[in-house]
Amino acid sequence: MNNKIIKDHSVSKKEFEILYDSEKDLYKTIFNDWTQLDKYYQSEKYISHTDSKKTWFDKTYQLIKKITIRNKWQLIKKYQQHKNISVLDVGCGTGDFLKFGLKEGYKVVGVEPNDQARKLANEKLLTVKKELSEISKQQFDVITLWHVLEHVPDYNDYINQLKSLLKSNGILIIAVPNFKSYDATYYKKYWAAWDVPRHLWHFSKNTMWNISKRHQLALIHIKPMYFDSFYVSMLSEEYKNSRKNILKAIWIGLWSNSKGLYTKEYSSHIYIFKK
Image (cartoon, rainbow, N blue to C red; front, top):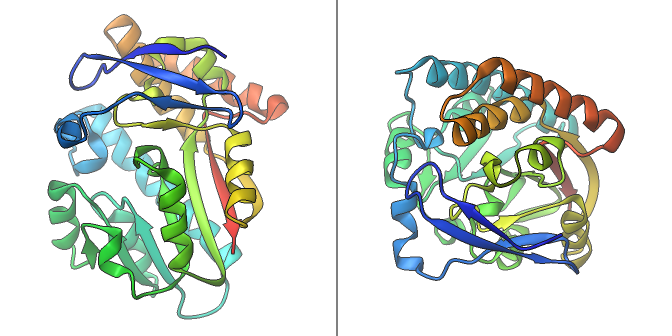
């Protein structure tokens, strides 16, 4: 593995260096101007902070989001089957995942730093806080981070905080992109899931096993996120060729998932930890 220079294609068009740590098997984005980080999220293209349905791409994203939300709750039900389950969703965006859980009868709380996304979530009558510290006195049966851990400045400190909020035998679910997937190796510097500087960390399975050992959390299951290869490939095609090139993206997405059947390296993985 080598250090890389990756361009922020979606917002600033600036280039950032990512450094490889062989011991932890992960990349770190070099970013020092923390007071300016928020501005890199200020874009209509950052779709997880909006409920936009303006374009066919927005509409497709929202449709797939509905499907994946249902799948995510099925996953939670598999690992926590008792009644009155409490769920904390960190980086909850506009709150649709929490809204589904609330309708299903779960006790749900969210954390979302982005003001625009949090406003939309609160308008859905959800309890959503800006910072994790605002809910430090509560404990939960399940804590979820759907593509969130890669955004935090110190992921080990953050997991310590999450662990303190997790009940005994509680479940911590973390979904992150995988830089060892076929779509990552195919698109190289154009791979959309680098997403610098918003993604400060770039994880592998080895990283997550190290996290499991360091924080004394049992890593009980790793699950692929099949839709991610298509979404990431469409964005990567746009970054590489200035157009989404849907058919090519679908082919690369399919090929990435097919490769994953043998390599077990998918575009993104869901890691399920037990306290």
